[in-house]
Length: 135
Image (cartoon, rainbow, N blue to C red; front, top):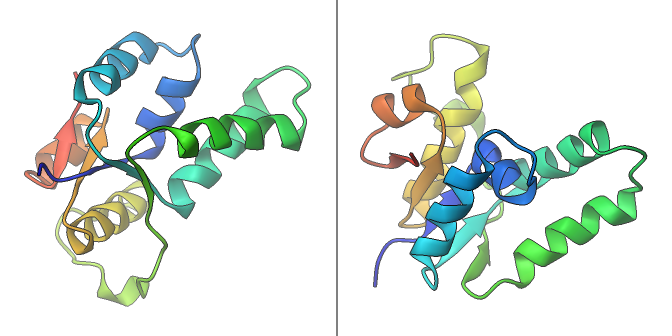
């Protein structure tokens, strides 16, 4: 069986937001991999909730959670809980504040036998082959 994909924050948001600039790219990729296993984690889920509450006109928290429920109810979804101490993160690829989450998601994917699906070219380049660029 193919390794499951951990959806990073930008892929998860792009899949859920039809107005997102990368929605078509992310959604086409997501449809193409079905029925493959895919995962979310607390970091990607919180990012989606925060995005919806910030970007959607007058959303309620219950509406934001409903978007997450739809993702979680999709066939093949797995939830991967956080279990890392941040001191276990590798030094490779972390040159600034924006790369800490990338490294964390890559480690989480490795620990679960998966790969990270991302729209972030730098993340995919630095953390290949565990990080996979959706394009």
